[in-house]
Length: 63
View 1 (cartoon, one colour):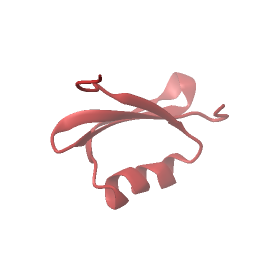
View 2: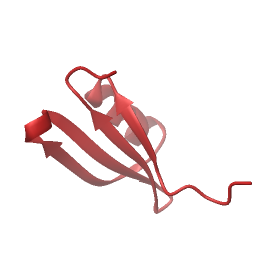
View 3: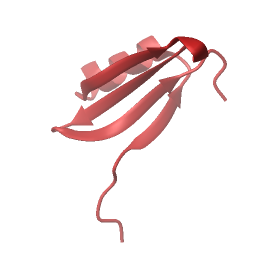
């Protein structure tokens, strides 16, 4: 049985929409937002109720 999860990594196809959904619709708070210039992508660390939960990634051509 699982007792906990450290975090989940999610690759999104539309960063702006995904950021809005997780923060404004689901209520996650932003821990840190990083633009990774060498990859032309964002990494967004999100928390729920103070617990780090989601690592949201964007890529120019996501899988």
